[in-house]
Length: 367
View 1 (cartoon, rainbow, N blue to C red):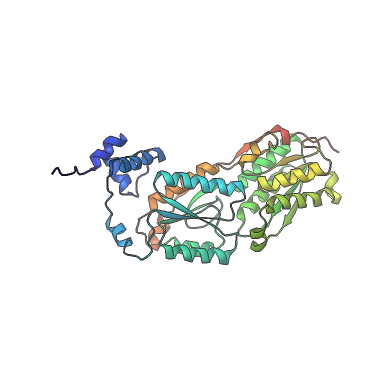
View 2: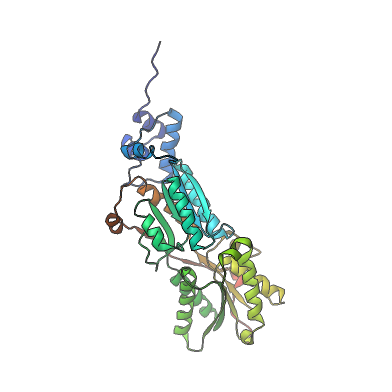
């Protein structure tokens, strides 16, 4: 009887076309090196094809003794998946995780701190390998505590002080870019339309601050009127089309306000709000961009459709989702004390980019 040939790292390396050392570092999840998603996929595909059995490290062997341990599972937290910004990030995370043979559980918090904490406790009991927040946590101090024992990555605002690994974008600069663009077109009076403008929603407040500061710097006569509707988690949970409807409602209020005659630019706090703003203006009989320039933030997929064609800010959702998982992948399996965590915080920044689409922007012609 012929003995079956033992599959080795050399066989996997030959099948994948990479070096034996690269195969070793990937299958053993070495935390201090980084490989592209394509290289990781080649190796993991070769592992499956050859039938190579990945040996558990001492850390992994220890973890398997924990009842209910879920190996190669990560948890992703986001406010909701109805906004294309978050659903795009989640799918990007899932795609990159899939290349590394990881699975993703998604949790919608609806920006409810108590619900977020409860979900986190459930996740800890499941012993997932890591956690990604697609937004700033509603309970940041609690999440920081969790980060001492479980790898956590946050996709958030550059101006945040959270002591965790982060993928950042400066929402203040994003607001500056929108304001500079509108000022160059000749706009002097704008309306900013938003959902809740208070902590922990620093992304929204920083966008507004960037716009206000830039308008004020241009001229004391320039104004930014703010229209805000505060949203509680219960209302967000039960209204799938919440942001569009709020954009519509607040824009309608703006159009019927005493200051409406001087406003020529309408800015949504994000693209979905801006869609509602545009619909309200069109329903009221105005033309875009003849009567109003309309802008948003995020550059969601619908914004590039010809019928929408929204001027907005690119926030690199796909890139940030992929980068977040790769950052988490490096941290998985790493033993970290609280002090070690403080010394090794990683921050990767994506610069916001103005995307101008002429169908929603032009110089004002109304007096």
